[in-house]
Image 1 (cartoon, one colour):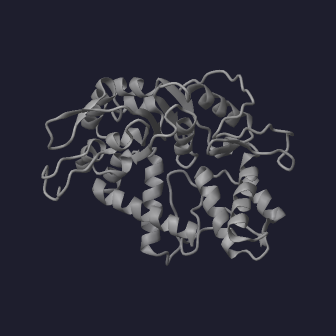
Image 2: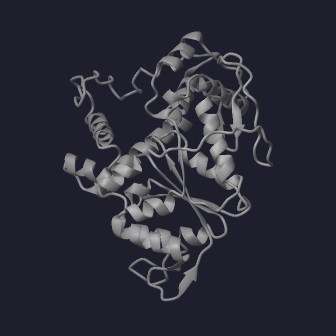
Image 3: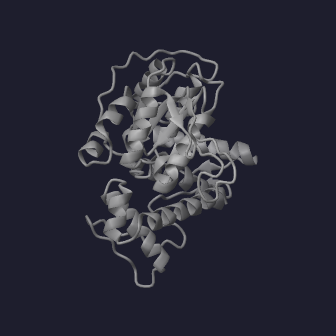
Length: 352
């Protein structure tokens, strides 16, 4: 990972930011500090807030490194809010969710008639983010040939739509993100070294939830408070739930915490009882913890077996979808289709 800069935290107030001091050292008295779209009270998060505060007013490219679900897009949004570009668009694109055949058209747009089905001119994300901030998530999943084109655009501030001839100028600030060690991605041939150093003018390492101490409990209470205000309820976390929240390692980070809490909230009358160790309804039992081995109960539905196998293999290869698809013996397109299906299912549970 990248080294970060030393912290000289300051308590400041901006139009889009409310900073509140941490008042005590335990989760029952301490308050979350809100910084843009982010929340935290732990020293590691205060370091992150300090870094964002320093880099946001500049035009430096930012690379956010952190595990899936820990809030990398929130970092990008906060950088945008505190920048001189705050009144202009913020556009996000997940490089890992775009098929290789479509990523060029999504980035740079296309002209009418450029290919079959191009019935109109379509502006790409560089055009849609003009004057503002473009967030490129999962940058290490972008095909290498497209990384070459991206590097040229970042250096020249010029691009051409697919099927077009006129070179267009762009004025965007790029914030990129990855859930992998970028230097390892370079060594494995998944990220160009020249692009890495163009994107990582100012790197920010975002800590996983398990390294944020009591933030996990403070965040759970915060999310529950939001749900209560939204639905006009007064539900509370039980003591056993708070103990379980502090005990669980939260491999899915803040996203997992929020979704788990939402499910428990829906089922609760007054006291919210949540145990993140329990399997989701219809998902079967959790596998016994044996390195490199998944175990299933007889009778587990095949879609659930497939889902757990895909997720476990993806984790084994540190999020590298190409290697995951090869190991599972499926096409990259099939893998993306499955992952998109799981994401929609998770979103359904979260909003049900």
